Length: 156
View 1 (tube, rainbow, N blue to C red):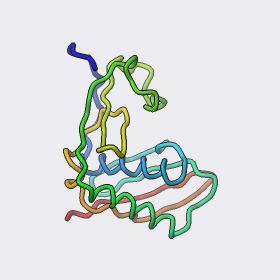
View 2 (cartoon, helix red, strand yellow):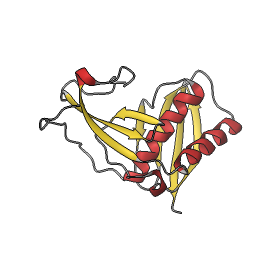
View 3 (cartoon, rainbow, N blue to C red):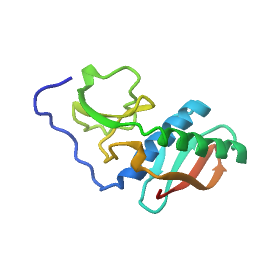
View 4 (cartoon, helix red, strand yellow):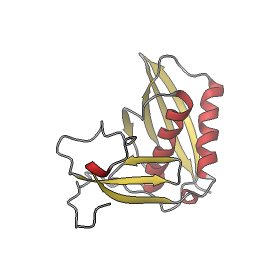
């Protein structure tokens, strides 16, 4: 890992850390359960959020419930959420950089949600998944190969 003071990209938005961390867990859950990529479009807010995933067919209610259950299972494990700085040349090969802007810095911040999720991210996060609350999918739609999940967090 790098030891000199890196120049990182600035984030253009202040996020709600519990919701943003829940998004990381949801993304990894979708990758693991359905073999899709992380969300291609997301709108993350304090009250409610949405993520869009490319899927070849709609999901049924049992599959939606299974997503919610798995996300809550990961949250309940009280996993540490940590970050490290890496230069692009030091990145593990499984880190997806496809969403990075063209002008992204050479030094990237890699966020880990325990050993469940690892990705490049400049957002704000909780320190432990115990700070997230309960994840609840409030609606879902599927149109033209895109599954949209709308969700919120319930304080515990």
